[in-house]
Picture 1 (cartoon, rainbow, N blue to C red):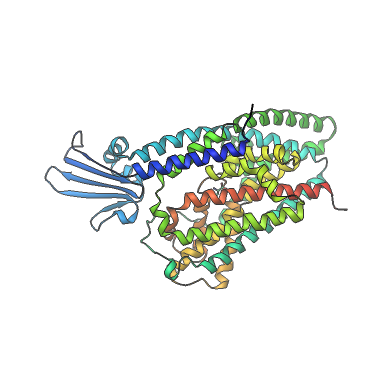
Picture 2 (cartoon, helix red, strand yellow):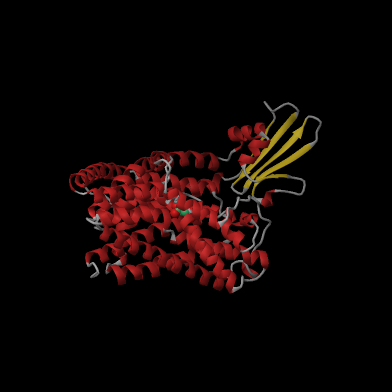
Length: 490
Ligand code: ASP
């Protein structure tokens, strides 16, 4: 029977989901309901206006006095309105009103967007379910398959070298682009009052030191439960190295156990991956149903700068590296990796996509398991080209808006270095890059609240940068694997 290739199925799922969500948003993205029954004491009526831009509540009390509460987009508010940054904040202050909103006030787009999110979430749960055992067995069998500490050391230094080089290139591309497009200056900018949602900034040193701490889990089992990927990776590598050093029967028993477990986990993962088209469909429908198009317009130039820079890195720099160093056709390689790239796009999570990335690298691109299982888990945690680039562009954009001019070169260098470190510290989950940005803002003296302006479009940019993150990890696999084929004389 004819069966469409998986990447086509996923692409179709994505398009159908996006079309359904966008139509829902277009036709059912705004509602206004008036409620006069079963209201909390003292309230005569409540009018809720819900749209993708935000929500407003008009409360008329029994003595006819009125209050206006707004959540979300700053333009929703008028001078007398009480503004809340998020629905959570509203729920904390006005629980009764928030409860009524949940039941009666949401637009159909919002309501269905939430339902699609839960359905798509089932696919993500399945991927998360296999992630930890897959990483452990795959990494252990990979390290033990290397056959000696010398080849392990070689692979480690090549992998780190690749991560560092490509992340720096990505940041450089971002800096050049933001200096060319200047999205925050002159005609291109449309500054609005920022919806302040300050993120607590830890110092950079603190963040990096806590990464080192994470590499030494106090209890490896609780790291598995949490899960903390860096702890799991560090402990598994350590365990495998010592099994290797113990040698003989012990090494081969551990290796056999790891390989057996890995074979089972891979079979489970392959079965789950078949569900990707449906999962991607629901995730796309949810994002497009709940995110309005209007919000994109005011930040168009900023998004353009990020997208162009990411596009350049993904379609020029990384393919050139694959071509020159791995001697592979980048197009064929991209096609092989497409299920992982499309899933990264719709889920915005490199950790979530990891099982798929591992499977594509091995089964579709023909890269040896021992390379994939070493380079990919490490890459999903610390190699984030897309995130590094994004951080640089976003912070320079904010600086342009804030200071009305470009940051001087010395400050741009500070941004570049901190962006690199922040990308290493960012977890492979949605919006992680946004949280880390507070550190860079602080490094160049910008207030954390200035981030408010870019929050609205973060999800879509997160999707783009996560695909680039996963693509860079995959290219790294190809490069490291090709070097393994012709080991340098040592
Ligand atoms: N979502 C990204 C990832 O999982 C991290 C980020 O927010 O930049 O790779």
